[in-house]
Structure formats: C-alpha cells, structure tokens
Amino acid sequence: MNQKMDNLDEVASKIGQAVDSAVQRWCDVPEEALRFRPSAKAWSTKEIIGHLIDSASNNHQRFVRLQLTERLIFPDYGQDNIHWVKIQGYQDRPWTQLLELWRYFNKQLAYLMRLVDPAALSHVWQVDPKTSVTLFDLMTDYLRHLEDHLDQISVTLDAFREH
Ligand code: NI
Image 1 (cartoon, rainbow, N blue to C red):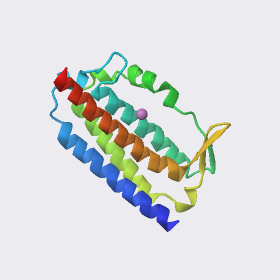
Image 2: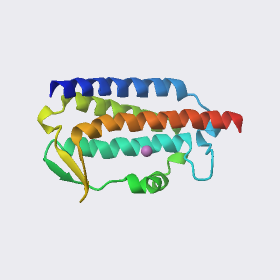
Image 3: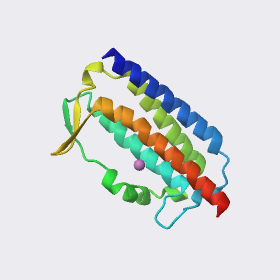
C-alpha cells in the first residue's frame, strides 16, 4: 500500500512539473501557430489542451467518486472526445485562459492524489460490462495520457514551423 502511495506521490510531482514547464514553454506561442492543425482531422495545440482539460474534468469525477464507492458506474468520454472538443469551441478560446485552467485543474488533481485514501486505490470504475479499471491504475494512466499529448503538441508546433 505504501509503495502505491509513493508511486502516486511521484505521479503528482510529475504532473505539477509537466504543467509548469508546458506553460513556461508555450505561453507566448503566437495565435496562428496555436490554431494550426497538421491535417484536416488533427487537433490544433489549443484543441489538444482543451482535450486535456476534458481529461482532467472527467478524471476529477472518477478520482473523487471512487473514494465514495467500491464500484463506480460512470460514463466514459473517450469515444466521444472529438465531439467534446468541438462542442466547447476550444479553438476560439483565449490561450492564456485555456492554459491556466488546465494548469490549475492539474494542480488540484496532483494535490488530490497525495490525499487519496489508500484503501480506495483498489476500487474499480466499471467502464462497461467487460472492462473495469482500478483507481490506482486510473491515476497512473492519467499521467501517461498527459505526457503523450504534450509530445503531440511538440510535434504539432514543429509541423507548423515547417509547413
Ligand atoms: Ni487523449
């Protein structure tokens, strides 16, 4: 159990560092680059951050609710994530507001991970009748997903410079 709490402490630190360094690196990127979509179906940098806000908000619900129940039935958003991004118009939001919302939402999630009840880490989110995920796995996978999309932003901004 302590091992898991140690792991989550590290996950929380990495989340905090990742958002701070991303804000530092990308806060002054010009609007034209932020709106650039490498292909017709690909997200722009603003939309990727929007998607990460959706990830934060959905996971926030899971992280809290799974401390209140052993088995949580709660809808996924993964299959609809393109619609989530479109419905909320992230492409037209001011960059600073998106970035700061994302940063401070993640600070709360990192804080929450350090406070999590260790007994709840084996509680499961029932994604569908065949699939379930533990709270611990959700929290560690949250960081992996975040890092994957930060890499995607680097690639997207490189593509803008070369297009
Ligand atoms: Ni994603």
